[in-house]
Image (cartoon, rainbow over all chains, first blue to last red; front, side, top):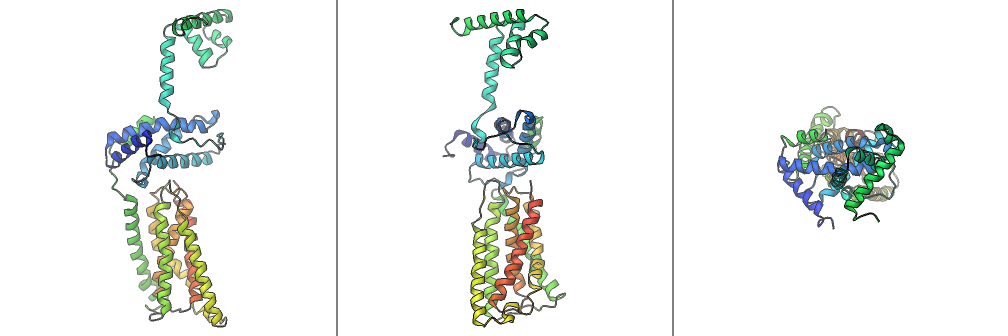
Length: 184
Length: 212
């Protein structure tokens, strides 16, 4: 089952090349792992401890590096990596006395999600917002994406709440006209 | 920052030969066994005053050898698997427990046939036997644990326990050459105790030393 997984195939071949001493493959492997590990850890930490995710990514990459001789070439790579990530998570949580907020049945593996998809979404949003005036784009970003209230966003731009509301409304209307095939 | 780390780790990458973990273990086992075998002539013979081949010619000598090497062999099977993060192999540890029970059962039968005579259980060296087995096993255990620090055991305690069983079994085998006891019950109780204590020491040290 794991064998036919394309992620497993790709990472395993990178790992095998890395064990032969191929530095480029190793660099590709580590940055790939970083991208998968970041959401894996972020999902397991409450918002208050989100800053630990990056530490955990680094600790895990270091462990992958220093313990790479414990990888058995005949076994699935993702299972090995998952075991290391899990070990590092448990160890970190214990050491920092963090209460993990993950539900017990959330056993989604490391490779369930990938940061790069979100990155692509964010790029699309930025491209779309680029088509309205800067101030309007910023108001929309603050209120609709980052979750600020209209009053806060208006205050940041030194405008009244009503003016901000009108600006956001116009901006969204023009975006809808352009990308959603007109107002519904 | 993570990118810096990745760049740092991927320059000067050293290749890892196939079965590197097993090779290191074999090396540690070889050096440790030599050290443990040296405890016999240097400490047991010269300091404790036990001549080589005390139970030579008794069939129980071979019984002791088979029993202790069997226990050590079960530890040897468990150690490489328990040294990895993604494996948890406990049947050899359970089998070792079963083997001890079997020996205790057979020993009790022999003791019963000897009409529960105290010398059959205690021999002449019962109270030093477990300690001398630990002493004989110590160099091998130290060598194994030192090597295993570079591994990534899913459970450091279990990995230390398996290393202790391996060292205890082989250490007791080396000790058997300098032990004059010839009763089954003696072996089942005091040899097992020595090996079990070595395994326990391995588990306690491993719990701290094999963390990663």
